[in-house]
Image 1 (cartoon, rainbow, N blue to C red):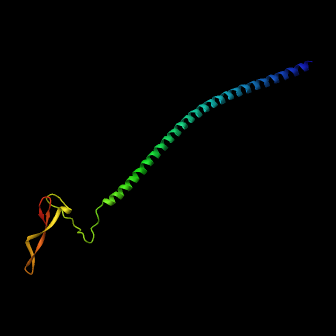
Image 2 (cartoon, one colour; image 1 turned 90 degrees about the vertical axis):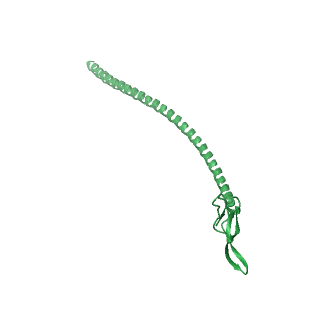
Image 3 (cartoon, helix red, strand yellow; image 1 turned 30 degrees about the horizontal axis):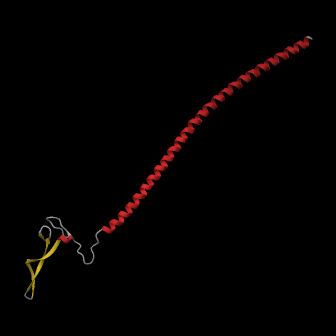
Length: 151
């Protein structure tokens, strides 16, 4: 009986040690679970923040895309306007001096008139030659606006 008592006591001691080990493992696992729960909560809050930032960036992106489309439309309108103005400018551009046109422009030194405002007259003071009994006179330019004689 004593032997049985000793066996039961040792077995009880072993079981008590096992129970203590299991209790310490349970405490460790509870601590591990609580740390993991804290980490899960922290990660959930991070996910919420990142989701909010993602939505803000998507909204900003859509705003930028609409601005980009508007600016592209404005640029295309301006390009068509430039093209039409170029064609209009070509139409209004003076013709190049041709075979029968003088390359130099006559400009009145007094008033700055050009083109049809300048006429050529015979300069009776300059006799170039006589053809028969008829004198050939030199030419002089006269401004129709101010009457200035030049050239």
